[in-house]
Image 1 (cartoon, one colour):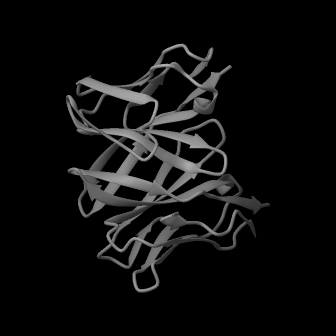
Image 2 (image 1 turned 180 degrees about the vertical axis):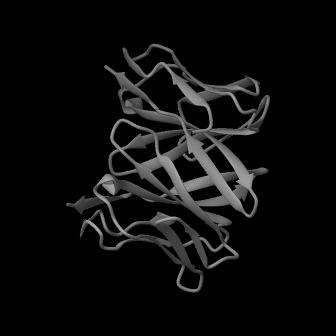
Length: 114
Length: 114
């Protein structure tokens, strides 16, 4: 547990509406990530951040944008939600620990786009 | 092109015996390898990781072995317990843009029978 919370935990929205998911961390980690998990695909990286206002795209970034105005908050926005964005979204923080690297995940947000 | 592969979708073992979960990868530039356990409706739980310069790392009942020449890693759980029943994900990290980015396998569902 790295002090990661996600909100909302569940959301149902209609196609074409904007949606913002929030990730909040309490331990001042520099690196934050957004993933989606879908059956048959494991977890796939959407966007990541390596500092305030520093973000970059992952492997499935189309249709998503992110913002990080404070160290503790990383926001994921679906500008115009589509049914293909129905998924479970996980936020994570990353850190190097000695000779190891670790990523810790939040509890997830289940998003349904109708 | 799947860079991280878990070829066994499921595994069933008896309580007290050893569970061996396998993972293959294709990218020799991966820096770290991580294992996660995931229960339904929860975020992935970090278990153990290993640097690409090591061949073994141990933490309690969990041991990860890395065979770089074969591009193969495995997670050993000894002894297996019913509470270990979950989906296990293998992940590999690569440094890009100053950040470690994870690539996940699709998971193996472990069932430990009492």
